[in-house]
Length: 79
Image (cartoon, rainbow, N blue to C red; front, side, top):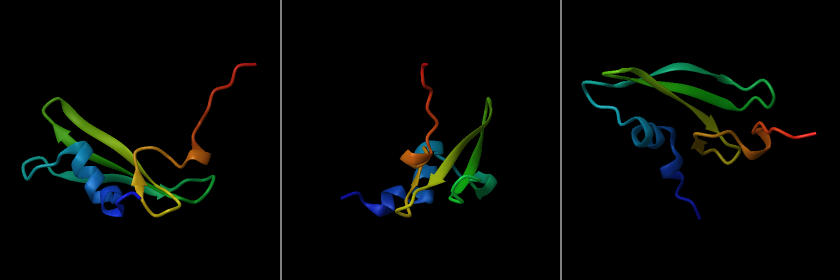
């Protein structure tokens, strides 16, 4: 079983963006997806080369991830 704390939004922001006191993170966007009303946020941290942002998606089990729920992922198909 997955540890829910390891999929909290704060844990993932710290894991992926590694904010510091001198380079804190900020939420630049938050809303709900049109298709399923699930939440997402964009978190940004300033780096020497410029801002770096990542979208985080709330899954149906309450965890946050850097990818949307399986049913919501985009796919390409060849015809």
